[in-house]
Image (cartoon, rainbow over all chains, first blue to last red; front, side, top):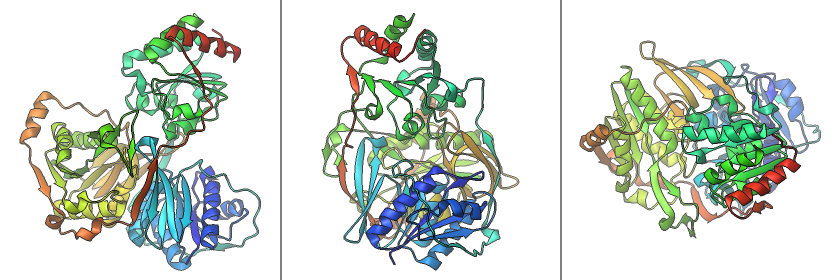
Length: 318
Length: 263
């Protein structure tokens, strides 16, 4: 028993990028265990997905043609049955919102240990060693899994997307779903509130985070943006506080932006935020903490109090 | 309708810190109510204020020191609290999802709530998994990463919005009882009022050991072992502007103009 089973992620008719990253992580892990990489895709246009998932290094693709969209009850039941049929050593899932909506249930049902949000994986003398972060990314840890098998969710963006074309056969997996145990129904999807500002369209973004302290202080940011002819965006806490509408949020659960210049003010740079802005051409960080994670991806930085720097910068452009 | 809210006291870390073995040196640690749990408490208390819930009970796995944080939850409106702890738990470095599930399952079996609310994740170990694992263990419905919640107690259903990636929300209906993991932004958590803080001192806070709950000591010996902790290597090649705020702002303005930023 040394195979790896990776579960693809998709939404509204499209495979998500993390699915291809799962193939790379899965292949690496299968190489270390000396086993095969199985990929399963559940619900939706599975044959179409299967063609796309048949990339280099994939040993088998299993399609489960059941329902249109993600439903965690269907996923949990299906993965449990796939596990029984294929007997993989490790089940890999994305650490996505949907991954976290079924992987813990699968682990519980199969009585397997669960390691989530993993950024690196290795097998050392038959022991799975997972690298994760704690305390909001301030420290990295290695965790050994003292069990023969495990469920693991991987963070998106940590493995390259698998490329090339494979030549594996696609097999349809017949699942038996207990409909009585399906107690949740997805009734639709909605985009978050729009508003008239499209931050994905801006060349210059002045982005504000938790460091601004008070809602009234946002005026400083809007003054700067006006002076620079820039658009104001923000990290999650500002939107959670209701200080700016959701369409201004940059990050994993917000918008992905790629401006020419991104000025991050009072933003520490949590991984969810960085996922939304790392493609910016030039990144400037203004933050008192020289060790803030944002400094790892910033091109230029000022380690100083934003309440001193921002007014001075505004004056420069006025 | 009874709501059980899981409340965790998490460690907060100063900007500058030192690591001692597989933990951050205690000198650099503080303690606070887990941010996501604060939103879960608020969601529960609002359901009580709306007349939908009769009782809000919190449960915490934590040592006596955590009682200060638990009182915060009581001050915000929870009716009573349960704290689970004993020596077996004190010896564990990393309490894994399976162990937390087994302990919370025992509490759920004792309390029999109609709804369990948990934070999406905790700010320290960030597994983001206990709520969904618990739901499966107690054989109820669940939804993860909920940022909007409406409960219909007569129909025995909840309608939730789940926050997906990329600014998309999923609308889901589910049957009660259920476990929901609550995302920040679902509401605006209240500050505890002075009156609330005074009242919290008189609210029941029961301590239970694993034995009290009928949980075997061995349950806490999970399969995960923390073997290393270190500060992440940075590959930064950031150019830092030095000087007074006026000087650094001037240097940055020059750079930004070079990049095409103009008023």
